[in-house]
Image (tube, rainbow, N blue to C red):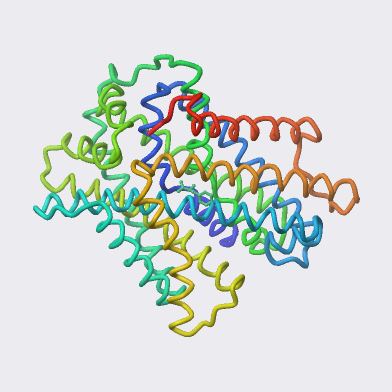
Length: 402
Ligand SMILES: N[C@@H](Cc1ccccc1)C(=O)O
């Protein structure tokens, strides 16, 4: 396999693996493991299909550098405006989720040392840390990101291997759950498979060769699927659904979950490893998303690249999500659900519209995603279901997850 294809698969996997690691066990405990895996598979399919559609649209407009350019070419300024609004909403919701999860992890680490800080202080500390890294520059973020990703995978392997003997099969029952809970779980599951901002880069990186970007997108998103399933089985097998469910509704569910897993090993340093793993899983996604939003806002608002310009841009990037995280208690899973609304627009509705236009104008080159009109219609219906589910959760018609 060519190294760009490999690199692209890892880019997709790296962007995708993130908050899902911490949210999915909470969700799967509520849906039951069997249904959890089935719904994850459905959301993985929707996400991969959307990624392939974006790739098809990018190939039809080789002169455009990113999704913004492709939108401008095919949909004009109104389409571009919708995409910009959806992108800002997605990025802000994700940053709010990462700040909330990160603050919980930092708070629990400090509490183990006897230092008890309120949530708003730990959230601000997490934001300052990310802000300093992003303002320092892309190269620094790149290095820190690679190191954290490698450490996260190593820790995951270690944790899974050490916990396997503790898994009790009686916990891993495939019990059924109420249909309303299954629908309510869809938005968070879908967000866990989001990586779509990386697709234009991947298509360019493999010179638009269909067999290579197909490999990168399908392979790169299957890796998170496999890792998420193993992780969910191990966590629920060790901690038991009943215990996890009691955490799902507490404001710092992530911390309780990490503590519960940590207490299942005889090694004293094990709970530090669990916290480090959670911090790296969140950190890799947070840095990627914060950097993407930072560059984007710098361009939109024309801020300078000097130090004061960068400080202004990072304030625009992180202040709103910080306030959202502080004033919306328990916002980790909730914010991931909100992100799903924007992600469906960006990774299902917009790609379907783009590809529709490309195919109608016969701009397509030999590559076309399989499935024709039925697949496009199916994606729209499932996408509507995901958005409807989140509105159901917001309005209280459906139970909230987390
Ligand atoms: N999948 C990422 C979230 C994400 C969504 C969309 C784009 C990029 C990232 C996570 O679980 O953290």
